Length: 117
Image 1 (cartoon, one colour):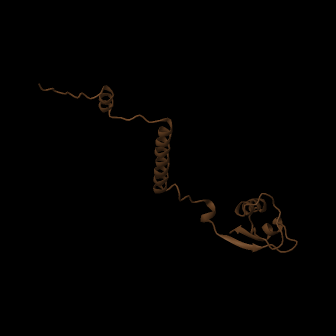
Image 2 (tube, one colour):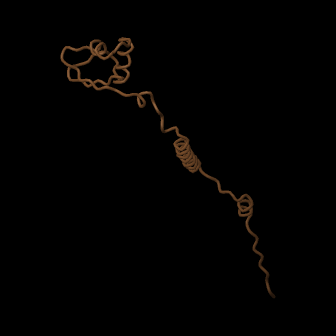
Image 3 (cartoon, one colour):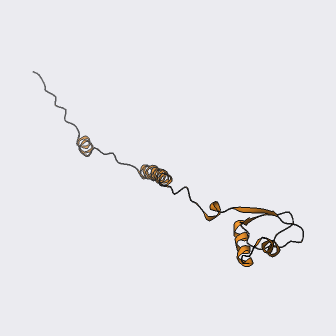
């Protein structure tokens, strides 16, 4: 007498082969999210640089400046009045402070100041 053996795949194999997707753990989902998120940031930065967001032209890039060395006893007011040439002295003091990133109008002897021409 002969015997016939039939091998049927198990039910768990049929379920996983039908869905075709493996299940990720919490750590795997986090890793997948971080990879996709970092790629999106890199692509966004590359696109913005191509679009010209990296080349910002400020007002100080288009102006010309005169460089002055502060002498002993000079103040920002005296320097602005010497270089005003008929302009408003207060406005020139504000422009000098902005061009040199000064928060206070205090200057010391030997300082180099950029004065808008």
